[in-house]
Image 1 (tube, rainbow, N blue to C red):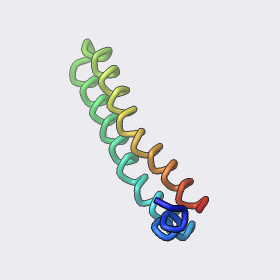
Image 2: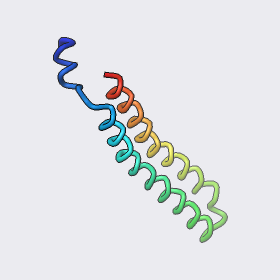
Image 3: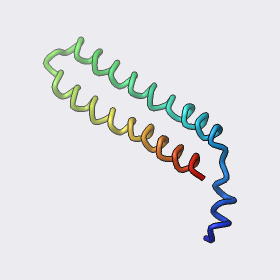
Length: 81
């Protein structure tokens, strides 16, 4: 695609991009809270499973946090145009 077509397609207001990122960060924030709430609940119910629960908790934390990082990248791409 030519540069003019790309400029027309990606013409996003930086303020609108910031609002979009803020709304997009809500999902990973809620997800991280639910993940660690489940880890704490599971550890309280079965303390000997703490190691496995923490491993699963941190790996799912990383997966949900990647969504927020992708949102940051998209925000910077949109605001620099």
